[in-house]
Image (cartoon, rainbow, N blue to C red; front, side, top):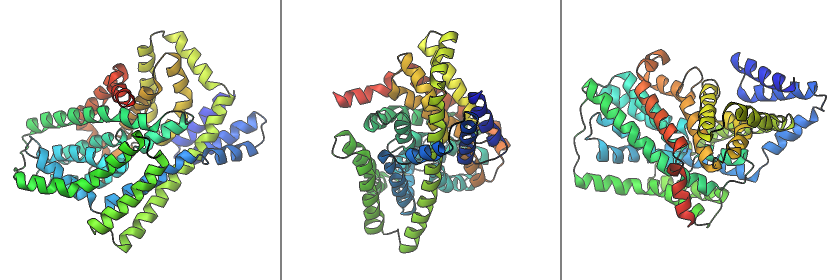
Length: 427
């Protein structure tokens, strides 16, 4: 009965529009009362959930990403991408996808990616004669790449939800090949759609311009190398790398690019603080929810239930993906990671699925939920920028959505795509 109260109340509160953090806390408190446990347990678990030292990396990476976004790096990355792929069919759409790969390595956030890259590229595409639905769809699905490349906040969150025993360096390395694969698949999809609609190409600016734009964008791209190589080589921890990223971002945007003035800096601090507060509050309340899951032995029940349905690990993984896709239609990515990791990670381990690979599958599946109604935050931001309705976007998004799903299934059923690079770097 306790499990029923916990999940039912949480689902009802979400459906009536209660914010996720409050829904988690209310469902946890009601379940504690039913189980005749003291309410102070909720406070204790909330405090413990937000007290992990590893979580310090998240607000610091958010701050670094905000600095780079407001300090001129997004414009330089878009210019570089335009030089490299603008000549392909549907040039500006291809530029948007490649820019998302570059900027994802700076922001680590799909929402920041679609806000920065989509906010620039969608109006440009509309101005150049591209249909609004194409401009929105290519931009929001390209934002999925940001979930996979370092410094992905969600991979750090998965490591924390898994108990902190998983290497963040391995998770970062595991996301690189799937991110590149997602980029290529989305670019091919964009090329096919653009050819069908008769979109044109961008003129080639010349090798000299390409070199100049590359040099201009290198300081921003250097942040990715600094984070990844530093953590991978053991020079500093994820938290230390996040602090270094903030200092590096400040130096690049204020001293080198000279686009981060005092007013922009205070706006950056304010926005980063708000984003951090929301995320950490969700993490804290999800910790109480997760404690109740363990207390009620939900992970054990999930393992037994799936063992009674299927004995093949790939069939089990497919069933988990289906459940996560359904959850992603009404749950944002961060709470989904925090809630589903304690339930499904033990199942994955029981069937011999590598936790690193499972983390990529979980994050990517939740990412597809971000571009799926009714609660797709990236979808809503993209349609707001493009000034179209969600229904208009949904009519033509399916080629890009299927492309993302295809990459997800490849990552799920071909473990080498995510595990090859971490194993190579450990050797």
